[in-house]
Image (cartoon, rainbow, N blue to C red; front, side):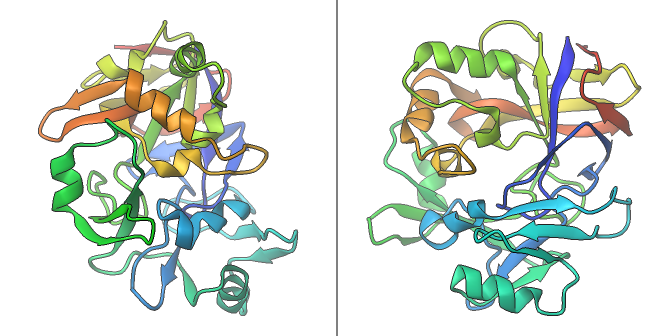
Length: 290
């Protein structure tokens, strides 16, 4: 059983980078979600979970120029959809991003007090509990799809730009099972924006049973699985060479609905985790589930 891929996403909702090695601590992968875009008009943190406004962020990609340090926002190179390359420290970065996106935005490295993001609920049966959708509803899109607002990083130990938790783990077993169940859909690990992809964990939706268990890596780092990862519309959007594919989310909602204690039943793939032992991870590193 070994790590097959590692990813970090220096700017929230932009494409990230595959890395051979990374360091993790209680804040997650160093350099991950170091920045986000703030919508000046609404004060909301931009998220591709609202595709009409922010789906275009997946046309940008971001990478750390050098290895991130623990207590400093890294220098990040951002490649725009037109191929132009900008840097997080450029004096004109806000203007360039605003012009490319068509809204007034600011690149920020610290979440404002009370920061939140919005999420659209596509019409897919079994995606999320109706009570949650109704209880967080703030408006409707022109399509009639409901939009919710959530606080950022509700399960993270420090203010951050994560949607919920600091780490997302996905197994090749889950992806393979989804391909078997919906062979016409385009299941690819990149759709799900994991930090860690694991091979050799077993068969089927193995992460469903990992809550409370520890993933121990050969190099000494450890992470504790918390709850299955709830999936959203963002996974269906075109990104890189992957096409738009709502069937990927429909398949998860049909075949892997998981009861999460206190939160109801959700369409899930993967598992969230907390870092319980800091250290360096590497592609090819062995692990065990305890």
